[in-house]
Length: 287
Length: 327
Image (cartoon, rainbow over all chains, first blue to last red; front, side, top):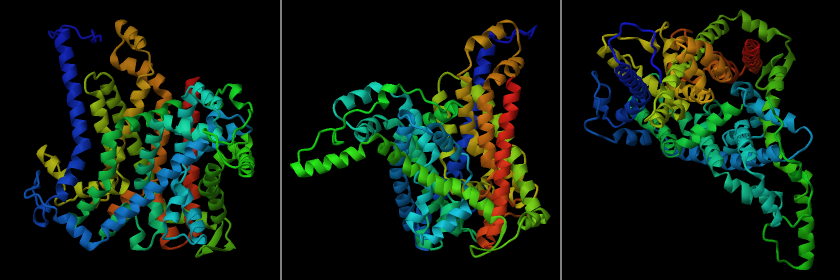
């Protein structure tokens, strides 16, 4: 790398400048990394404090004594476990259907030739741009008429297939060599067999990305489950925890429940972070 | 956009069908002929195309595209509890434009949109430039920067609510160390939107820098190196080589960021309830209040239609603008 040679009369050698440049870059990266991680550390640390130590200034950096009492209090005051179960049920249903439906549509859009294919793919891409709020009132009315308020079906139906998922699977299938398919057909596999017995298992990285993103979207979704659930025990965790927020906030249990909300995605992310990155860049580079 | 994938025609040729299973079945003759009939239908090319696309098309049609049309329709009516009562023409829109609440919501949302988009893009680009020149540890840092992106929205709002606590918040504690503050953050009308902007930067920085970094990798190295040898300064290279070549990526980040920012909701809903006063009321929060708390569906629909038009129009204008500068 060439160092800017425009500076004259400088007594620093090129090597020294390079070292300074590198040190500065790492310093920037470390500061940004702290900015990203401290808020998460802080919520976890706060949740492990006691009622007496959480609201204190100057704050305790490391909780002492370590205590799980906030988690116990949270479960005693509101149905936290039920909310966790609701969130898990909703996420699992959405993941299963998204993997199935998006693989199907993605495969056909990638490999089959038919009229309106371009139009349909255009619609899939366009559907990613339709904001949630436009869908809110009509979807609510439909759910109301289907008598699905306060049910899992009502919550998951609008999210069983996503434009993003179809797009992701289509991109992945398009990039796969056709030989695999051809040889499966030689062995007597029909279209469905090719898709579900050969291609989907081979597309494991894309399926993993899709599953993880569906989980993240599912936990991100707030407004929709908020309006279609009025019964406390049907709410998913992210909606449930906002019930803690009233005129006076008890930060102890609230921080505990917040930690429960972020744990699943953070754990999955730390295992599969490569898939996240690949899925997102695929969308940006190709789109 | 090239929507026409290049699929060799050989794949589309109809071929003799089996009963649809890879192994082939071993059943009795009548059962077998029945199964083979079913199999022939199920494996018919048209049936396959229809059946694989149907769930996606039905769900997207009903839950994504139909609502756009239906919202538009609803916005011209007075409604009581989801019953369209009488045609109201553009009354809902007129009332909105006269309403000081709507005006405040629009102003706050635009302020937030411009601020969060601009700052996260500038910092994200800077970070991508730093990451590009980082050899060891790049993947590690990138993975860390991306963590906030996977934090669910409610948790994100609560994490920052707690950090911004005026009394016990960690944010003011950190500022105190560098000799600043205390800042009233979300309890002050002047600071509340900037607070939301800081939060959004935290959430998006990893995503924005990831996209920009992917863009930087598409730029041939020789270009920058040749310019550097010719004595072109770092800033000129950024301005005249890097930025023009990054244009598609910049557009992508800009559009995505704008669409997200215009939907500002969870921060005011969870943290401030639009306050203090109306200083953090957002358009989507107003939509929620009108549509689901006052059950004024007509007004809620009018807000969603207006916001949708602004979102769509904004995206199209940005795309046009970037296209023109391309020429």
